[in-house]
Length: 482
Image 1: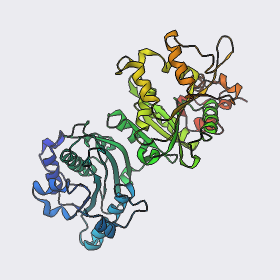
Image 2: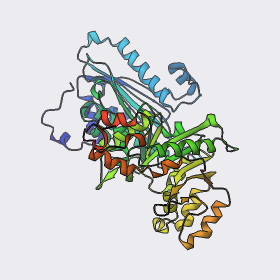
Image 3: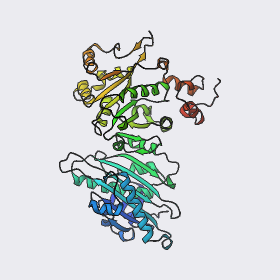
Image 4: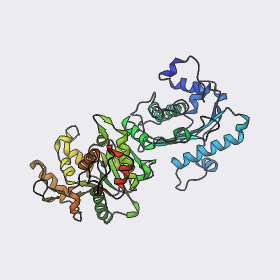
């Protein structure tokens, strides 16, 4: 275990960047390598400046030239350098060299580590603000396998110097927290922003692995990034691993289904399948370059102002079990979500929506604080090859099927709505399952909590069994009668 500095009460608060680096340097057990490519050796310089680095730093390397980098770490299949796979190769190689050159049997008390980052700062034209990957592979006990933390960041400043300073401080925070907060992963996330303005740099992907993080679900860590305002959106794949949104969305056709999915129902699946069938037949859509996203907004995860992590995990596990990629976002308004997706693609974007949600989009009160009001919001929403695939609803009183032809809007919105409808931006889903129009997740949730019958057959196959087996959504444990 890492030793502490006796009597140093400052570390019980929030130590400065210098004090963090010094504490690492003065720990006789911590020993490793810093490898930084792209933006210079911004992290390791903090450790050199404070003194005592000779007992901590085995080697530093900055393979700035691409040919040198390829020679050391190997070429990437896609020819890129600022990637997760590049970071993984860097960590793997540096740990291998450390173990080879400094045999652990000769240093049984050493806690080896390799810190690495691969970073591209803002370009000369200031068109691309830059991004980077950073990570650490390290021991907490010499006898245990290595642990690993990997992070992706996006820069928000418009000066390379400021971006380099931010990455340097965050790197120190990562190394320090990896050793001194490993037993509280939530603290690791919290302290990554020590002495950094959150508007300066965004963390949109983080993954923990290794024995000290055994049992930790990285989806909860993703949720914390949103909760702590470190990013606007996070994504995870069907296997439950956090994935980089840019990697999933880049130059793809994107179909998004927003919902609470509490729980996911047959009507949700019908909406997805029927809209997908229409979407892939669009003239400019390549099915092989199409990504389907099930999206939940942060506002859908809050209860009395607090995020219920257990409830979130119930939804996440069910969606992943059905093989879906999930995005959790802070985009309450649809236009903000579309604006975000448009950062990564200029291809076709589709939104699958129910009539009731679609009508709410035309409510002017939601755009009071938006520059340009509803006109400005819709300008952002529909500027990039966007279409809405509209799933009908059954009128609760008359039983009439409501679609784009007979939905009711405020009189002031009618002409505004017609502009989008008659320009082909709104596509009705006609091939729907009529019996599914009476399925509402809120009713199912209520029956689950009360232990009532008659809800499993309204969910996709196998979902009801998962809810009962894992006691999801407050299921009380009563056995259903057939």
